[in-house]
Length: 247
Image 1 (cartoon, rainbow, N blue to C red):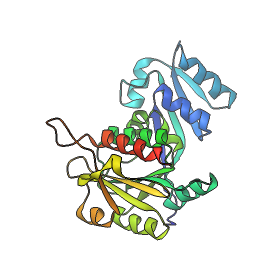
Image 2: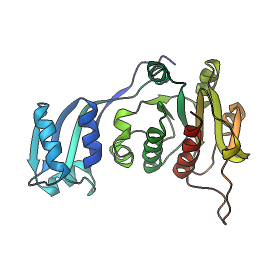
Image 3: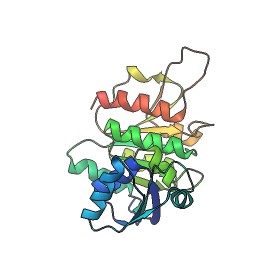
Image 4: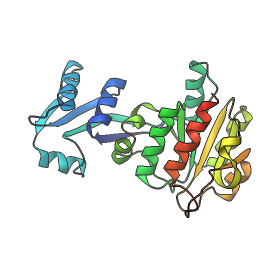
């Protein structure tokens, strides 16, 4: 899992994501900010100026054109590059903190808002990184950064050709792998101590057959209503915070 990092130029928007980028020390090319902005926008302006980052004041319509969205909240930021991590980077981040690895693997999440929400929950629960598929899955985009409330800027996100191979790689390094899917043990009855990874399947199909077979445990969230399952990002949040209790 020592693939060379993949970098892409990225634009992000929204006050929280841009503040996260500034405060995390991300490399920023420039920031566009709405004229006469108030509140957190003033803080963004001051931080950017203090850091020597070029800031241009523009009108709201220009920001909408740049962002391709009306949800920019008066701020658009261009990162010098968005660097995807490697799985080794995530393991190293855990080792640097002297903590057992805590990783989230996403087996084909396609909705950018789900991806962003899962990254946000992973950050809140104390995970060391998120792993996504390179193909047939959502990638980190401005919409994902916005949905993650900026967590995608500072949390390592790795891209891999396949989740099944990554599970094998992690298991060789002593990581226990828990797949969230139907027909498993009650998630609240399982102990998640030590090095652990949670696998969340795609919105429509759940875990692929091969990935499910490779998991050490399959855990499920009991449903008492008429629906058969939770949204993928909601399910991830529920299980992640249960796992965090045992860490």
